[in-house]
Length: 504
Ligand SMILES: [Cu+2]
Image: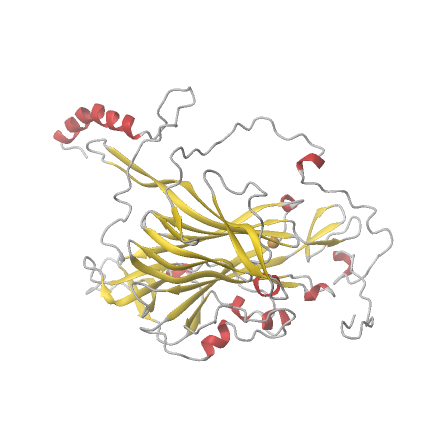
């Protein structure tokens, strides 16, 4: 329909054919739903009984959380200090992220996500969502108090966002803040003394969840006690399906339920990092670990390998490279680590996930230049926040996105530089993705690299968890600090004998 004239232009009949029809553009509109079956996931509508053997797993924080929230949005936790922002397009954003008073990030945000579908039959060739640019992650955000999204002591944040007429409205409980146990943080058992020291890793999770039509996405920033930032995405919800005739299969998707073809597609996310590593003048280094040819002078036995590091001087795009261990270092070259004599940095490895599959000349690809490289390094410009450009809705070509920013060919060395990283999943649906998809998780690990002078989590107490018990009910779980101390003392004699004999 022409929306201006309200005139009907054409009726496209949805293809319902299968693989034996080649491109299978044919349509069998009559009784197409007759062979479909109902698919429920809401517990009260399920015909199968819910499993009965799941015991409660409670998270108790009897003294409350270790974080502090003041001035509405200033969050402090375990030497971390940052501001939480929220807007209709990006959802939650982190600002002025500091550790122990030292600046790390000026701004950290999810910038864009595109979901191109790979079914070439009209009208599916148009299927491509830009969840941030079209829908708005902040607008599509869930009220987290309605579901059971976190465990433990939870702080919810409201946000005031503008509706499409610019009127302010309050969205309740759109971001949640909580701590979670993330397994072992660091551990060592001294094999001579049998003294074991183990420190749990605790994370501060800043999470928001969005529902855009069929799909649901969880976005989290997770700060840890070793100065690390983990950025997590989770895709869940209901895969997009179309009808398929009874008994047929299709190369363009997978039949996940009788009559329901879940089409092949990709989810491509862009994360925007505006680093401020002890200041705003930063340099991005590309570091690769490469084989070193055998040579009598430098590598006579051939075991040596070399690390090749080079600064990125001009705005550019790059691709992940697992075989060279490509690592991106966001550095302040003016401040050297006193121990290593190398620039203080935060690093990450771009995820070598598949990039946009659509043909370079396709509308899908033209609209999403950002989804064709894993990394974009650009100079900072006010308001330049959108990897796929500001206006994605019904766009034909990406404009004002990262590709245009790179094309400025600006100096990015020792400058206010912005790093964008793209990752995703090629989602060829499984029957197990139906009727609601088990979450697919991705994590990007942003870690200090010569930023500190030792392991920043060295001072985290290895306190015993008072509520841990063994399966038989005895106090003291497997990692009980106190019990380990005793165990170490008991074993000490034996190991001293061992050492005295010079056996290692
Ligand atoms: Cu998917």
